[in-house]
Image (cartoon, rainbow, N blue to C red):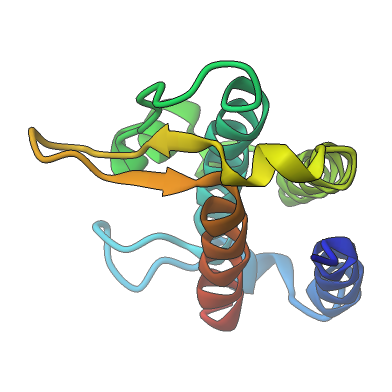
Length: 144
């Protein structure tokens, strides 16, 4: 599996981000909706969580790692951090994910992680989690 696609996504998006004004980054359609900057912050939170999953699952299966996305975005107050800092954090975290997955042994891709948020179990392989991470990234980047 070629995970270099993630680095290509990040590099391509960084160029596109340069065309977005500060006003556009900070604009909120309503108090409940995330701004573009907060969406990037959410993607940072997703990266934090998935870095933990991708590392821990290599040596400990079925660890439960989840987060409350709205609470994390609010607690980290991305809206009031400079856009450049949030984007740099997003870039660094995703480059770290590229490094982790490219150096992951093939056998580890079939190890499993618990991503359930409720009493029902949701166990996924690392290979599936990595694919879902990239799909999740695409989904949110399309909204920016």
